[in-house]
Image (cartoon, rainbow, N blue to C red; front, side, top):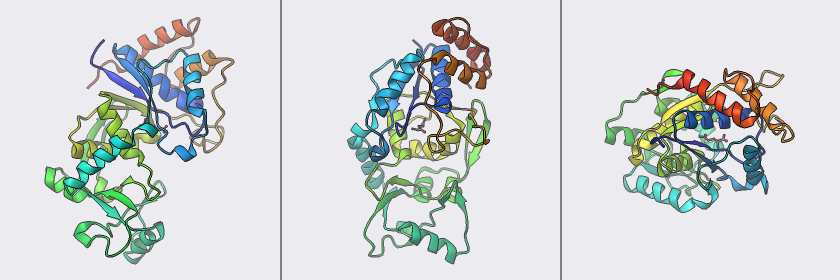
Length: 303
Ligand code: GLU
């Protein structure tokens, strides 16, 4: 086995659909093409939104497609103490601060400044509760946020972060101004995806992140958090998205159908086609072997 460690990290808010199967297959093929390990991580950090049994059903769907985790799957709902420890490290450095703003407070502060920036429907946090701006000013603490300006100043990081994606090429983002101080722990007490994913990828020794392009925009935030927590930076590859008949990205939110377990090979073949791979080559195992060789030809040079 090489030192490569990849993962597929579904949120069990619903079952695996054609779109999530593409990410599962791509991450599996990349791990196999490089003689590495492939891990499944259940991202059930938002437990109230995860129907009972969905995660087990996802594991069954994956197994029916011949995709089986090389290690026991990790469940984020059991790892709150690890996320707490990471948050405490950030607080000790003065890099995380409590925020007392509601969504309305944020919208009002932005409107006062004539600032209408939003990113994927999320308002860019204007920094009201940042310590440099006077902190909570008597408001009760709700969420915890990363103090991007302080982290960047203390670590000597440039405002614009540059990284490379193995499929999308050179990428850049000014997280401070394009996203703002993002949430690490939510007002409802749940851990934010950004913190959980960064802690888990590091603690699982993940070297390569292969996932859907809808998540590409999170990479800069995650790289910044990796730097703040002293973690190594994994390589990134974001796969093309599957669109439904209406041209929109397939997702659980817009009712994507679960992968049909009566014909898993047909589902795999469709996912392989989207990744630019050829038709099936016999049974599932033979097909996966052929696609692994083809994948290696497409992406074997890890920069
Ligand atoms: N849990 C996320 C999702 O299902 C994926 C996280 C990741 O791959 O970084 O959308």
